[in-house]
Length: 480
Image 1: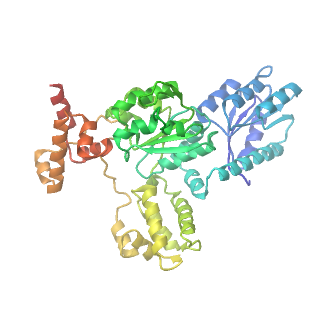
Image 2: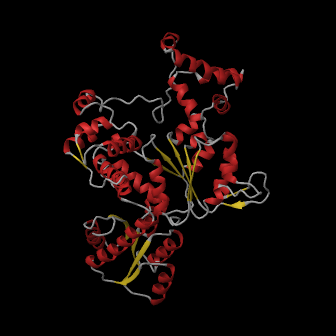
Image 3: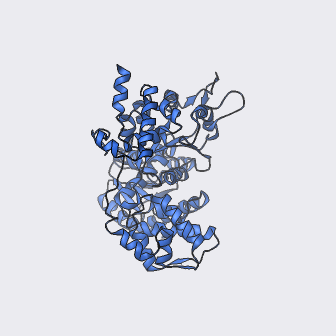
């Protein structure tokens, strides 16, 4: 197979045909879902999406397969459709061709012929991906035998095939949330349109509203800039409270008013957001209004951390290293087997971000084009490979300390007893006192406290948890 693996939905009432076709297509590396009715096919398409729909013209009655193909062509841009007709109808063939069907074939169609047709579509998809910037690293990141990654890819395709679908992309810092958002854009019908990003953590809160919605006096804003494409909001947990009602209205009506403007504008793009917290945590921690959070998370995509992708790790590292080495003018750089084992054994708690930093240091500082284990160990911050191995002792299986609650947990925020509080070092005690003073001064309003402290709400919440600050105490005092 020369093209990429495709996700195919096969619709036929004939079990034998379904089995023979499925075997032929899966042998070429494609994934096949079968349906025995158009209703079942639509349910599969709504749940998983697909690249190619292959359907009988008549599945259960009359021309229900033709109507299915027509509906998919009208609503799901980017899906290639093949219709197989036992009794070909010229009018149906002309109508479907005008709508953009890939082929309309009289049966019988041999398994080899169908495999060839789908292979041609795979070549088209590969060319499209090359044109839209999907490179070897992105393919290495998305192709996996790990079930959680496969589920992530299915959800990406689902989001990409529905132009109005919003999605929340959840994962640890550095896990690849930005990569997933770019993949959704690249696989969608909006791939030729702009891909616009706004980092809510780094942006001045007082400027965000104008940046997003623009004004009536010449500043169009990012929503207008993303027209026909995708707008990505990074770290959605930092969205201001006073903007949340406007964002919910935007998602519900697909329209908005500019700042101090009176002319409603239509939003003709896709909205994606990333977060290190799940939608449940965003709501339970009172960071995002529930109606907005669940409206945004029409599709929720979980990005697994690197430590859960052990079988993929070397392939991802190879692709990333090749990209970095090429940019640095050292395409001949190779890594020894011993060094590759060190790569695989490292826990990568910083995920892809840590890996890119380490490999960049490796490329820039390696004295030889053959990277040995000692050179890699130094890039990881150790004097030698032996020192790294000694340090590793039990590290890979270490339980990662985290300030986040387990998903769906009712465990309260950790609180420090007076004895433990006194054990904090001087800077930590000073920071704890500073945060508590800010919370008291703002009557427990985290957004205002964060502004007073000069940090984002996410950072404030993280520091509160790490320092064991009892937020409920400030909420109670406010209520009193």
